[in-house]
Image 1 (cartoon, one colour):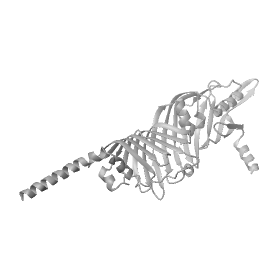
Image 2: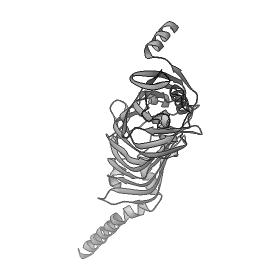
Image 3: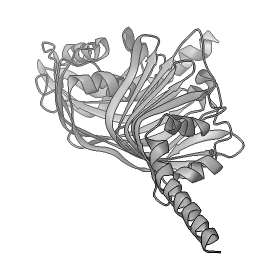
Image 4: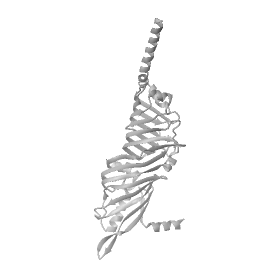
Length: 365
């Protein structure tokens, strides 16, 4: 009997030691990557982590995380990932991730115009995630389309007949200093008039009220079905023009006022621009620009839409100028309307009213 008790005691002690040491053994061996990839079966993604921390009752932690798609079109890196599920829960229920806390993630999506991939969640159950200091990059071949960092986002990924990603409403970034790089990488997509400038000062904030992204469709369908709404806030922004679009607007305003063209532009303080994305186009309403070197009281209003392909559909208005006895006066009740078409790099501007443009389009049908 004594021998049996001793044997049971040793077995119990051994099991306790194994149970205590098992999480540490898995986290410090290649098995940690096999466990992570078990959650990604059927999704077309592969993952690995430099280090991991597992516990029986503690959340799963991983550092130096790298996730790539089998076709190399998706590349995700993160400084640290915290999963609300314990390691053994991920083994028993590999597709139930719960809630994720991701620190400094960098997401790069490469869209190949010749070979596109349809993303799918496979058997992964809906989950939520908090991203801190996130960076997002979108490329078409070797051409960068958008690159933005420093984002704080709460999101959920779910499946209600179709898989989708939904971002929780809130401020994505607040009073971020503007740089020429920010204008070129971010504002080129949100507002083409402010893209690719020579010099810029001021700050921007971005609020997202709604962002819904379908996941299980092809990229071109994803762009068409993307649904987004929010506000871009411009705080004390001053810049110098460089883009063909902005330079042509300046030239028209200078000719109307009889002044030499100037590249100095002031954005009306605390300008709030309403943004909407639907059917593959970004709609904004409205941007107010001041041209102090042309006329102290000259404000130009611009609104319209930008296609993901760079196509323009904009209306630009500014006060009419009348000449009486060689004295120029500004009539604020009358405006000059200009329609902008073409592309961001090759804009076409014509002085025409909406009624005239509608009438011309009816005759062209």
